[in-house]
Image (tube, rainbow, N blue to C red; front, side, top):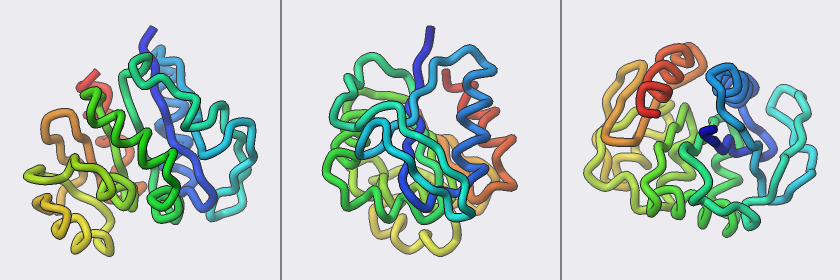
Length: 167
């Protein structure tokens, strides 16, 4: 069975976390919600509460095929948490498919993934993304190697279609 990580932190965008979470399960994946701490309740920017299954520091990345980084305010919080940044870098180093939507690239900027890549994101993250070495494309989904990116919740169907194609 293929396994996926969906990152979770306070301020996540509801649909950008739940749509991939359930869609991956529907496709037969075992999906873990991973936060800085395991068994912890995290609240979305709209008040939805979900519990993490595991802590980032407890993950053996070699057991996984995919890392999903939802947007919202969460990625800005994730990027300053050492265990989450290390997990993201481990996913890059182990050649996992990495799917990031909206503000998710704020976390990936902390890795060495974006240099020379084509990607998209929420428009307010564009300058940061370009400063990290990526080329911005204003498209519903951009695939560059094993990196899949989208702009906002309206792009979720294309985002998940292309993510699943990579797997």
